[in-house]
Length: 269
Image (tube, rainbow, N blue to C red; front, side, top):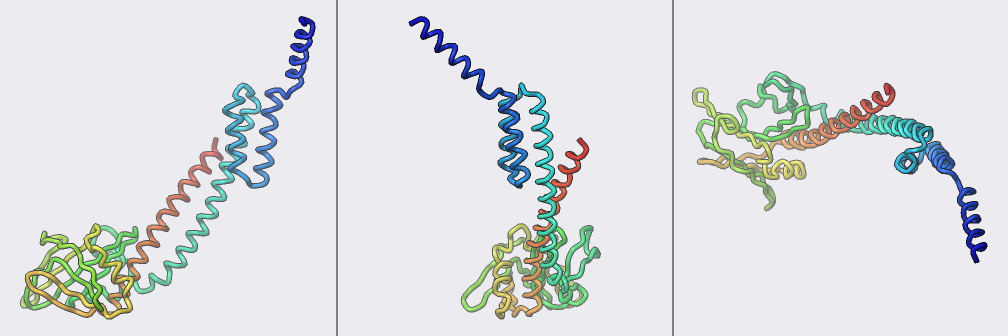
């Protein structure tokens, strides 16, 4: 019985010694990762390499090779990502180009450059009552209500409506900035800005219904009613869409910059 037990231990020892060594197992994972990389299966290749680095730290040569291979994969991924982002940026620029034809870029009205619809330029619109679009080059967008008349109505919000449907802004109290007024002789001007969501869905309502004869009620101590000009509706529709495109372009550029920084880091280390 003792002899059988001894023989069993010897057999088990021989089986263990005949199994793959840790070095062989590490090399096998390296080869698998290399093949997966050639096939473009970067995620699975990185998984193999992460396993090697966590489970075979004692195999220094293989661990160093795994680290270098992992960096090469990340480099390839980021280079591929840059190409993909360039393609997306090109698509967004193509969408933006025709929409910009009716806007001018101006730095005459503040420290930041803004977009002004050609038909809503101040020199062409100072003596009319209308809704103005306010897009900027960063993708921010809001609207303002502009009243011109011979008497004050002290308006603080607007309602846009047609065919039983409507949207109404929040009330903006007079503060000399977002709700301000001034006069010149017999003429009065009132300007209310609906920033930070205070349009309360009016922008979206106009953009979705821009082909309809939208009416606007200026609400205050007095009232004024207008039918929006088609080009004013188009200005808000296009400015609204432009704001989304510009924000997406800004996001894609930030992603590309991040990818390029990673590429430069990997190439220089």
